[in-house]
Length: 362
Image 1 (tube, helix red, strand yellow):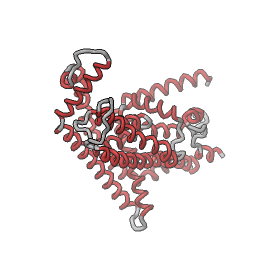
Image 2: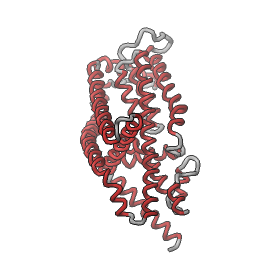
Image 3: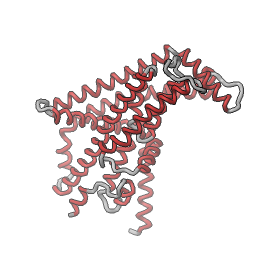
Image 4: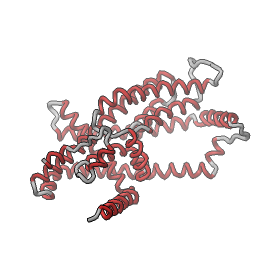
């Protein structure tokens, strides 16, 4: 087979895979979220099992499931309470937002600044809120399906070894597949677990800071920060911008904010941004690399490209899963000499994980 024919087959196969990922995103993205939630619970159960001498792996998994599900339910309740609290002060927030819109129009040299009500109920605003409503409705259905998938993943876990033995009767090849799977699973589990710990640490410090600064609904904003930190790079930037935006339109500004030439709201927002950004920058650049180690081994450019590509293919779920999915691709590509060059391009140091393939070749 000529090189041109091989290149043509690769191009066609790549196109077919991308088309399947895009058109099957409603099924595939939901199942992928379930798999990664399953891995988080497994990692949590392993930590509980290793930390305790009396709790075996079975009860540890059950405890991990209860803690994760309980935390998830608590998070949903927290978000609902936060939205309700903003709704109770809605008129005061609307007044501040209208003043902010007027300031923006004045700085831009424009006249007749619209109000928030006018923006919300024009054609673009109605489409915006309709999209939000559809997304929330779809998310609620996806959550139920994800939990069902996770339950079936746990019930099917005990049969995976036997199925692997039946699929690969040759001992050498079966061992290679098992090691590739272990490499992928350990890398993804470490990433997800570390990301959870890092997000929790940033959230805790941000919550304490927001409380000290007098930011209203600090617990709700901290929960938003926790979720956004799962999105690589861009998520931490957005997480640093959300609290100051809410502080900018906060109805009551604390008395300690200095009265400078600028409006106190702008000074207050800058202070909130500086504190929240400090935690994002310091933990993200000093603590996270030490904890993450080489579990990702992806270049920064690849992380950004993966975020954009998976975001286009699978939307918001793709953005959350972009890093672990790309790590999985790198590990799989590294196992074949024909695709190893792709793994090298994806890796940060040019040395993708090829342990299983190297040992088998030897």
